[in-house]
Image 1: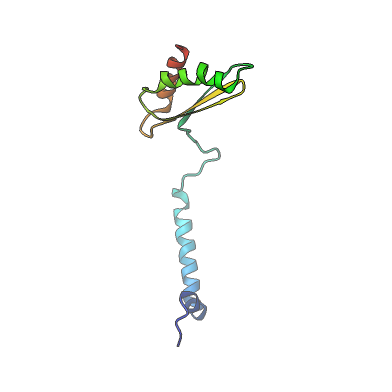
Image 2 (image 1 turned 60 degrees about the vertical axis):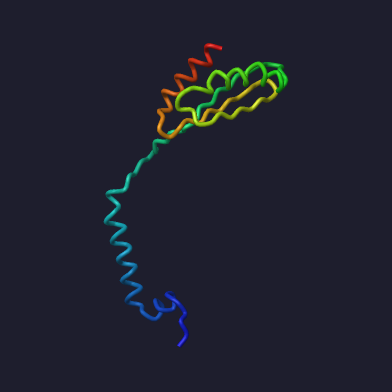
Length: 118
């Protein structure tokens, strides 16, 4: 007799298949009350965006006049994991990723203080 696997075995043993299905349903309904259910789940983004508009400036001017000074000002802030920046026609954006162990609100306050000082 060939070994055709577990699906073949369950097709020959209907009682075992039905028993397994009932057990899965019972365990699912038993754990339902302990599951965390939210209508609007709370999500926390561990990134801070600093966007500065510089009308009629080329990307090179935005980089030299906005992005580089912001990067230099915030590079040693505690809780900053990574800094990414983008310079485009008329605006610059700096994205700061926050460490997992750091409080995003505190890092954002420090970044805001440093950027406002520029």
